[in-house]
Every structure is written in C-alpha cells, then in structure tokens.
Image (cartoon, rainbow, N blue to C red):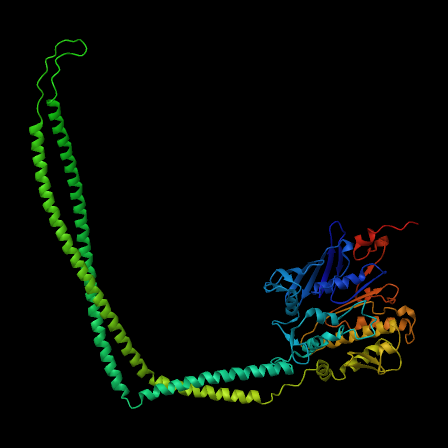
Length: 605
C-alpha cells in the first residue's frame, strides 16, 4: 500500500498526503487537485501519461510504499521523465535508477520491480493474441483495471477494456492473477503462409542434409571396399615397424645435421679471425709504405741541398759567413729502408699463409653447406615417407571408425526421413486462444452473484438482475447494456460497482496473486442530475457504506466532491479522510498543491 505521496517544486509549498491501510476518502471542492493524487500514484506505477500540467510548477513526485515482501520502498519521479529513483529498506531491492519502459537495454525496469512486489520473481509473458504470440505482463495495465479514472467512470463501454486491440493480453494477465496459468509451453501458432514457408525451409534443409550424408556414406563404403581381403592386423604391424625404422633414420639425420651446424659455426669463427688478421696486415703494410715514401722524400731532399752553391756573405751585414759542414742522413735512411723491406717481406709471406688458410676454410664451409642441403633433402623424403606410413596406419585404424560412421549416417538418414514425413503430414495446432472464454470458464457465474450482492447492499433498485457479459466484459442490467438504459450518473454508479466487484473478487482466498488496491475517482459522477432509478441519499449511503464494510485485505482510495459525500461520520468508523478547501480558514487545507491555486491572479471585484 502507499503510505505517503509528496509533490514539490522550486519555490512551491509541498503537497503531502498520508494514507492508511483499508479505506481512504479524499473529499473536497472542485479544482482542488484531488484527481491529481490518484494520477500521481498511477504515474509512479510506471504510467507514461503525465498526471498534471507542468504549468503548476510542481516537478517532483515521491511515493512511499509499504510492501509485504520488501518492506518500505520510496519511488521518486520527475515530471515528464522516463526514469525513477528507488530507495528500499530491503537489500534484495537494488537502490538506484529504474526505467519506466523497455526502450533501452541493460537497465533496471520499474515494471519488473512492481511485479516482484506483488509476488512475481520471473518475467511472465502472456498470450497477446489468439495465436499465442507473447508479450511481457504489465503492472501498469493490471493496475488500470483497479483504477477507475474520472475520465472513465461514466463510460458507456467497459471500464476494464480501454482499447479492444489490447484486450487479449489484459484479460490473459487477469486470468494469470487468478490462476497462475499463462499457457506456459504453448508455442506461437504461425499464420498459414508463414507455416508453409517454414515447412518448405525445413524440407529444403532436410534434402540438403540427406544429400550430404549420402555422399559421406558412399565415401565410407568405398574406403571399406579398399580394405576388403586384407589382414588388417598384419598390415598395421608392418606399417608400425616401417615407421620405427624411418624414425630412427630421421633421428640420425637430425643428429648429423646438428653436428654439421656446429662444425660450420666453428669454421665461420675461424674465417672471421682470418679476416681480422688480414685487415691488420693491410693496415701495417700501408703504414710501412708511408714510412718508405717519407724516407725517400728526405733522401732526395738532402741530395738536392748538397748540390746548391755555398753562400759565404750575410744578407744583412754583408760580412763573410763561414759555413759549417752538415751531417749526412743517407746512411741512416738506407738502414731504415732495409729494415722496413725485411719486415714487409715477412708480412707478405704471413699474409699469403693466412689467405691460403682462409680459402681452405671457405671450401670446408661450402662442403658442409652441400652436405647439410643433402641431409635436409633426405629428411624431407623421410618425413614424407613416415607420413605416408602413418596415413596408411590411420586408414587401418579408422576401419572400426568407418563402420561406426556408416551406422551413424544411416541413423541420421532415418531421423531425417521421419522428420520429412512429419513435416509433410498436416500439423495439428492447439486450439486458438480465446482469453474471454478462458476467463468465463474460470469465473462461471461468480461475477453475477457478486454484482447482485453489491447492488443489493447499495440499496439499488428493488427489482432487476445484474449479469456479466464476457463478450463486452461489462455489466448488464436485466440483459441490457448500461449505454442503452440511463445517463451519466447511472453509468458512473454501475462502473463503480464493477470496480468494487473486481476488487472483491481478486482479493478473495484462493487467488494466485492479489493486486490489493482499488482507486475510484468520483464514483457518483453526474449523480446530481437526478436520473431515474436512483433513490437519492439511499444510494449514496449504500455505496459508501459498502466501501466501509468491504475494504478487504488491501487499500481502497476514493476521491469525491464534498457536495456528493453522504453525511456519515467516517472518523468514528476509523476511516482516513483528507479534505481540501479553497481557503485556509479554520485550519482548512488549501488543495493538494497549495501553491498552484494561490499563485493564480485574483479576479477583480
């Protein structure tokens, strides 16, 4: 049940309503926001219909609900938003944001939460048409049956079925609440053209599979024929011996290959060492040649200088110069040249030896390359040979597998044959689903008895008989629809009786899930038109006395105008009464949204 409803907005006085279990009566003058209270509750049930105009300035709606399964749950929703915020006392309910519809995936959904609250722990999909198409059960749709809106209360048609296009899932949902039966396991009956297309698709698939399996069976049989007359065990032993011999040869070749690789690595290292020595010798020879050129230059220079005439006069003073005899370097240069020549001779001989050694190493490496290529070629041959032996061995080993494969293929062909026969035979579908007929069969004449009991207790007419028309899903009086009898007040009263009947019936013992709530807005709308068939205060008193006497195991919220409410001391009977006025005199409450009417411009006198 709902404990408290609160609306608020920036700069607005909060509107707060507190409820109790059992009967709650909200009475007041016209245009004091009474209807908005019920619409706000329905909005928190996940309705997508705005409960009031945003011109009021009230933007936030909050409801506190006391539930039997999870204790207290607070649901808050902003006007025109498709999400709510949930805060629960019970840890089984996750706090946070819930979506009011299923447009986005991966979210928590308010509809699922309400279904859990009333007792459903799994997603139930009820039939949505006669062919058993399915749709998710909706708490909003269920709650609409137990919410007689002011705009619907005087309807000539059924107040239960708002749109005949959606009557099947609605009645199927009500049937589920009564019985727990939602025709689980019955697959959707396809339309004839869809069924034929599906059948043809299945037959085409069967033919394709039969063709594939037949080819496979032929291959199996041909393989078996190749093995006919052979000693399978002897063949397998011979192949095994061949495999072992070839494997040993492969192992020897692998070892030889590894030895070649090691030897090549050693030769390559020696070749690298030779290259280093030759580079050093070339550098040393270049250095010696440079020294010889330098010494030759000095020697020639000395010869040139000695051939020049002597100068005995000083260029500055003109005096006589006594030239001293210079030392000769020719002998020293010649000695150095002889030494370098000797060194070059030794180096040249050593370089020749190293180059010869390097050539021998390269020939050895080339020979190893040739041998390694030969080993690899033989290895490839041996690997192909051993693979052929293994393939042959597997072929013999598959002898039993092939036999089993043929048996399996035959079994599959038999299954497909039966499936084809089944598809060609006319399929017997379950009978079409008729929600109203199912509901009628379950309820019988119980609705008739309950309607007449309510009317009698409400002091309505001394004669006449009420019955339930399951085709219209509405009340009949003496077999006549209410649209063909009297006017607005008459229809409002009978529709209120229908709402009471449904509330009483769905809250009796033995019902699978009890909704436990009833909301009626202006149950006697138009009653003051003094239509025929009403007996004044007797009808008013009778209806409200029935509200008092049959609150049931749930919560009943009635909204009505002050001028229609009968003169009954509700407080003395323990009834929660909320009264709204258009003033604040004598402690009066100024409407559900106090700031709304107060903020309107005052009329000039």
